Image (cartoon, rainbow, N blue to C red; front, side, top):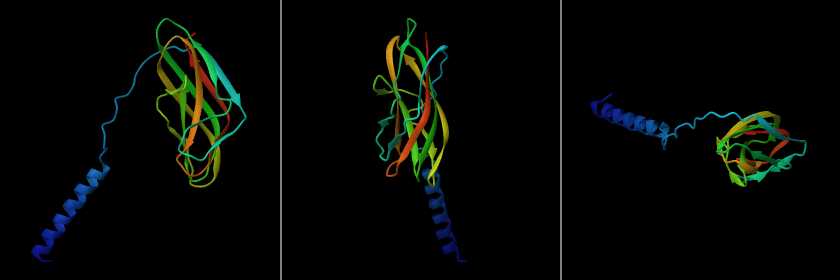
Length: 165
């Protein structure tokens, strides 16, 4: 190996390594975690056998998923939403989110709860927290979306909403 070839090879390896490192680095800073403590002691729920299907990247409301509740207390407190569901899909991912009074509200926001390489159905669970819900009447709804292009489904499912009495 000639000295010139060795210098070119080393330069190429250095450039390739720098490119690999920059490709693996996050492109944005990670958000700080949300921390809190609360005691939601009342639970409202819906248990449904009606399936909902979606094959787009747009969120759609899951059939029969509305849970109405009245958040008690004199100041904002957390609400915890827990989902158990049969889910299905084909070569895609299934994302969920909860809305509070029509606006996306749960943390984490729109997590992927299932991913399939082939057609598959199985049970999934997810727990989302709404850290600061004001006292008064509210409506929670569950929504789902596909990672795009192929159909996903959810149902039957149980949706539990725990809140302050």
